[in-house]
Length: 89
Image (cartoon, rainbow, N blue to C red; front, side, top):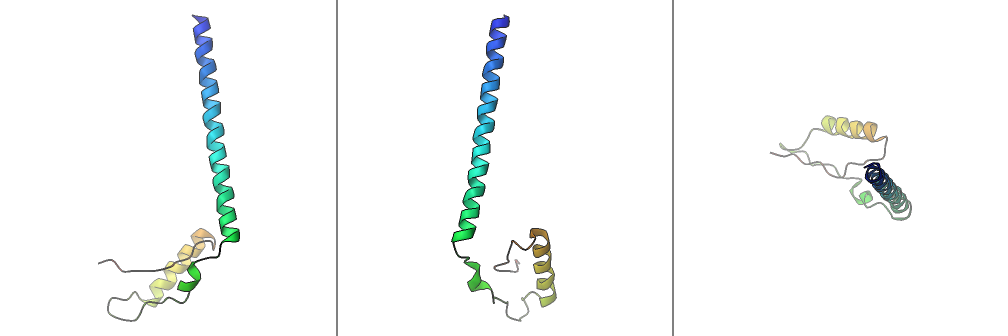
């Protein structure tokens, strides 16, 4: 019985180490890919930089837009940008 228990624990340990290693490699490669894309590919949000909704009955007030932009900037530490704001009815 101790032989089978030892074998089971060995397989468990090898399996856990393998899963941990693969997940670690996925996270590291994902971070490297994100950094490379952000460094070498141009941002596509620049064409939306001057986007402002037109003033009408359904438009979102400028004060609310300013609050939303400030909140997103504060939470994301300046990394996120708002591309488009739409009112859902």
